[in-house]
Amino acid sequence: MIFYRKFVLSFFERLKKHSVRERRTVMFYDIETTGLEPRIDRIISVAFMDIDGRLLAYACDADEKSILEIIALTFMRYRHATFVGWNNKKFDDNFILIRMNEHELPNECREAVQHAKKCDLMIEEWVYRGGKGRYHKLYEVCRRYNVSPPKGKGRNMPKYYKNGEWSKIFRHNLEDVAALRELYITFKQMGIVK
Image (cartoon, rainbow, N blue to C red; front, side, top):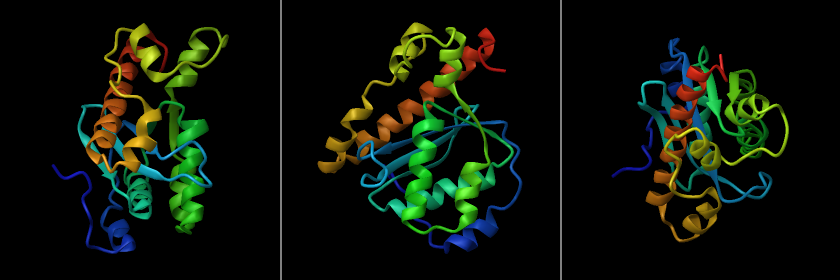
């Protein structure tokens, strides 16, 4: 199985090619990293899935700059969509923006991520519970609402990365976005998200 598709075209040629306005309403996304500190750790995987469960963009590779370009292109291509994640406002987006700065990607890349319409299911669920107590992990909330939780744990990513276990990283990333999609559909039916 191929876990990372390398593009031959330059970044800006790809941007021009994908500048067509896509009309997806909801996109689920998640990143995997080598740790929790964006100034020293790296992004090693990203996955984007649509509401129908189709994997629309992904990258799982040691080349972080290519992963960041795919993230930027996806946010640009689906700029009319709402991007749904788990703790994405506090962790994923911040991590992505700092790493884009580190790689000196063009401002358009950072702006695509910053200005996209977002929904953070972690915050939505916390507000639904009355804004009390701690934020819960994705797998905990999945179990609470009878949604299939991801099998692995994000804390294993540094170990998988160190051991070169790319298939485990990619599988976990896919399980996360699939759980986000299922949780979003459940929350929509319950009126937790609009």
